[in-house]
Length: 314
Image (cartoon, rainbow, N blue to C red):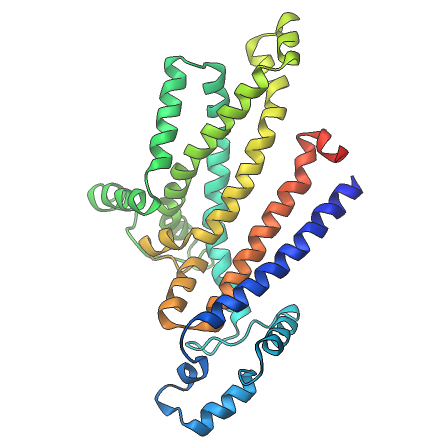
């Protein structure tokens, strides 16, 4: 087991290093001078040269990367050009807003989708199966921004059940904060439930065809006992992997939903930074999202042996 853990951690380290190099190079390929943006209309040749020296922009790219990477290891992702705030605290503040929405949505989607997919597999080629698969396909086919706009139209404008746009911090008013995140959570919940239902159904069908399931049925066990006591654990393994991928993808791609509902999360911060050409914030957001994605998938890999002990035999 320890060998498996160390192997997965060792694989994550070069991945993070490659992502750091990729983010650094991509930001350097963006046209424009960060120093000129920071100084604005007050820029002069002398002030630009001085700021280039202080930021290390007058050095070669390998030297710049070494300085930036060393600062990053100490938790220094630079200073925002637009707000003049340290990037790391800014990213962390926005991340917890996004994480709250994403975690609730993925948890609810998993609780509903996994049993629904198993029931669809159990009732294969029946009306129940066709209904669940059709619903899952429809939900997954609708883009998140369109689904969010539909919820805004019906639940917000026509029925007036929920506030349309905006955000309230949980520290200010927990009740109002919950109301403001209902529709963003529902948007992600409905969209991701579609793909999880399909994965749960596919993995359950594969398990139900195995010999030990036939043996359990031959012993006279009820179908519910076969499904939940014998098929669930092995069928949940691939779905668990997909849940980790969904969680990482949502944390990195929630910008659309946050823009629709005007939530000041990490995705909205990245979008605003792109429009403002705030290079340190763009770089910090991309690097942080990459780190979270790798960390989430590492946790998923480390927990996978709980569902399939054969993994540790690698």
